[in-house]
Length: 156
Image (cartoon, rainbow, N blue to C red; front, side, top):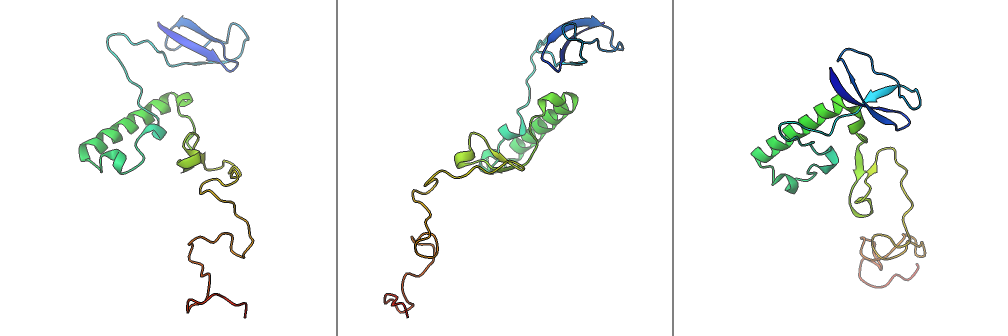
């Protein structure tokens, strides 16, 4: 016999004592199918849940410049998280690749398939992009402002 915490699709949660092989009962409140919910109580020690991939170091500097022991520990942590997610898919979260995670995407990374939000006026580098002089903006992007000999352009 075991104690299981169960939940249904509508959010009701309850506990049940039953054998390992018995089928899961339906929700006593709404009658829908239930699923097991990972327990939060540990007996005789402590357990830690490995962090999700987005909380793992993402840069070379974050891995202590590739320190062998640190990277090995990270790999083991990632593998234990993967095993946990295989056992409890509700913990997996969003697995789409992250396309942008800095600047305006720091709080909510841009993932593959997301709609790209329209930039706010002057976002990023402090000026608007008008097309008044043919190439968008003129402040050192390699566009010549005059002729090759250094004299101003005359409109020839």
